[in-house]
Length: 312
Picture 1 (tube, helix red, strand yellow):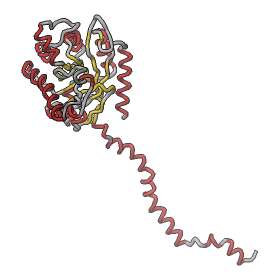
Picture 2: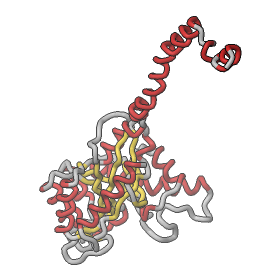
Picture 3: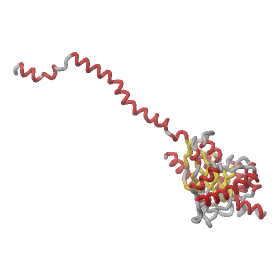
Picture 4: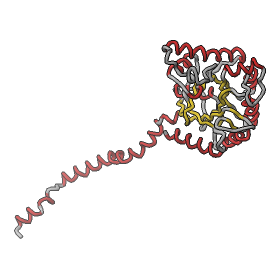
């Protein structure tokens, strides 16, 4: 092989001159820190994302919905005292802490704190058996609850004098005072006379009503019970449970204007309440504590819905 051909063949190796080689080494050293930052950046993202995760300043609130408490029979909306007692024990064992709606409202308004697994016990319709059977159990297990009363039903038990039968009587104004005196109760508005299927379904709008007429009807009904409880018990209600779970934008606005800070639907599930977001304590979901099921089954269902809301 000639010298000329050999030089041509190995020429590429001779182009890497000392000066250029030094420049290449320098550039590699200069780029090394940038390369390390690029490689390590993804490792820091999960932590940063967690710090900015809005769920950090929120709580998943569970609302257990009860109605009647009776020894004589059980059903979809009736539990026995022993089943209720078992529920209270199982909720505690599962790590839930009993809270009242006013505590949830304070948290949503930006003040106060909530435990990791807050649970609201709610009793709808204002049955006298809630006082007769449930209150002693609340005292026994250091629990608290919301009692949503229907004004017309309470007024009938009050005026008729037939007010102490657990099977059908409703809470009178005196009974409400007794619940409040226990320090374990909050009284909720369940309407004065809209817990009915007709002429309107719950708080639903009649086809013949204008928007203004509808809102006046809502205000008249809600404020009638509101003012009666304030007069009889010296207590201002701030939570509302929609009859049959039926709610409307108009009703929400009327209640907001009246100063109600917590509202409840009958939509099944748990709700995420955000600290500093007042609207997040509205239309809270609830879980019906069906008396036909075992406590173990319902606690399992509650845990599943809690975890689902927590992951959302």
